[in-house]
Amino acid sequence: MAEKKIILTGDRPTGALHLGHYVGSLKKRVELQNTGLYDQFVMIADLQALTDNADNPEKIRQNILEVMLDYLAVGLTPDKTTFLVQSHIPALYELPMYYSNLVTMSRLERNPTIKNEIKMRGFERNLPVGFMTYPISQAADITAFKAELVPVGEDQLPMLEQAREIVSSFNRIYKCDILKEPKAVLPDNETCNRLVGTDGNTKMSKSLGNCIYLKDDEKTLKQKIMSMYTDPTHINVNDPGHTENNPVFIYLEAFCNNQHFEKYFPDYKNLDEMKEHYERGGLGDMKCKKFLNSVMQELLAPIRTRREEFAKDKGELLNILKKGTQRAIEISNQTVSQVRNAIGINYFNDESFKEKFVL
Ligand code: TRP
Image 1 (spheres, helix red, strand yellow):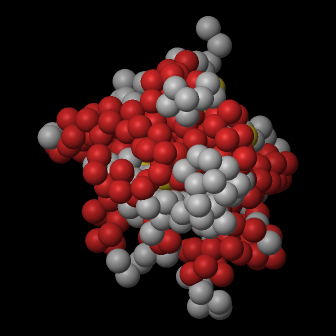
Image 2: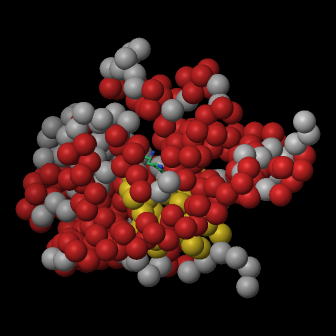
């Protein structure tokens, strides 16, 4: 049998995961896991979280098991996916040291995601060095496992590009083909690529306070949906409405299907019919939100229940993470030893080292 292709992806443990994470990547991971065709690693990126939270490690500690719970709640399982915590993998400290010599400052400064994050966090020149170089560390995360597929949202594309550049420089300079070039696996459509927040803001993000969390209870979820931003020009029911840039319709686009209409909103056969009525005028926001609430409750109820189930045994959660981390250490150590060989710094295990030395 051909070897299974390797998948690696991860999340920063800075908070519980939300719907943006779900449509952006978690859903894909569960699908990929269930094909049985891949060896999938899912990493809690606590080192990367520290790059802009060095003064608040407690926040990261708090969120390790929180993120683990979200993983298990959406249907990732330890018999099919290896879970690991970044800070416990020696390879992820060593590889960045070698890779950082292959990347220039100007290349790091051109990374659009980094540029954007620097602006959002107001770092200017007081930027932690670790933050500036996290794309190099992320290249190590991916290559340490020789991952070829990386399920992520599109904001991570610049990180993948940087990783591919490092791989190709490394293989060229050290005349080897040890490292593999990774490819992103993006969500199926544009809506899911960057899910808007409940306030209509371009991105669902914890810092903007516009998130629906996977762990939100039934009441909270309903309340968030009922107070969602819609079309500000749709004042009276009979006014024509806009479905574009209207988060209620964007979410319906991302989450509802025709069976949902049959079950919860039989006035329409599908989303196109519903949209058409809204745009013509005569369909009120309340009705739309109630429908969206039914769709979302159906999706999130089983996730919530599984989460509560797993939360009962924190020892087991920690065990799953520990076991996965041990496997990850072994696999990534093999890459490190190949990398050292390729560079030629394995002085104590290299017969030719002594022989080639002439006084
Ligand atoms: N940068 C990713 C995020 O912010 C997290 C991450 C760290 C990651 N290392 C990774 C994602 C490796 C994919 C592959 O969500």
